[in-house]
Length: 212
Image 1 (cartoon, rainbow, N blue to C red):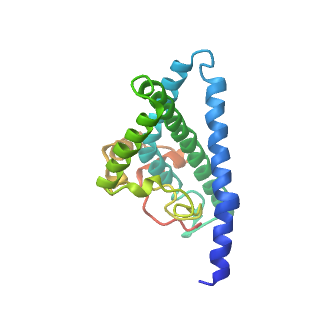
Image 2 (image 1 turned 60 degrees about the horizontal axis):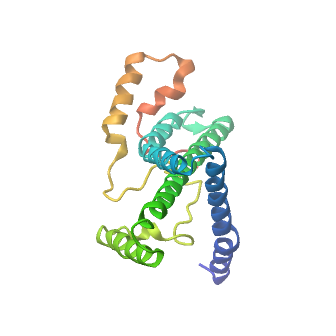
Image 3 (image 1 turned 90 degrees about the vertical axis):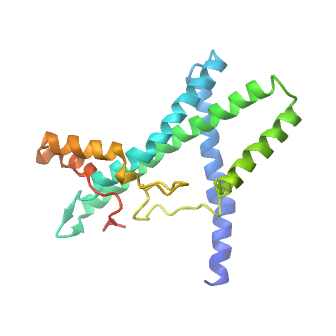
């Protein structure tokens, strides 16, 4: 790759991707404090933590949406322009919802750590212990890459597997009990053509989208 592309990539990460991501996080973080139990900081912290735990559902509903979209707007093996628009809108909505819930988890853990760790240790000691213990856990589990930000984790939205989660144990979400449950319910209901969108959620999420 030409040096110019590397320079452009670095500039995008430095001046666009990373700052935009941080401002987005900051906005979501502050809005939780403003609108979610604003008069009770402790309840807000636990509520955002609990809401953030829902982000784990993304390992199930994101592939389910990918199932959903596999055949939407596809004619003779190719996706129509309307199908492409629907694919783009649906995938972006799913990613946005997941980002909002993931930030709730981040905010909850951060605030609760400040609240309870600071109660038993001074800030420097608490920060040092947390850094050593938690990062050591990431290293031992060979997941330290999780703590790295752009340019190492800039992900193109047009990937065919954009809604397929990446897991430490490389578990195949499409073989999970949840997805099999969706499969059974979907076929059991014998959905009408008008419900085709839900019907497709029972199919494999690893099929490459013809739109991307």
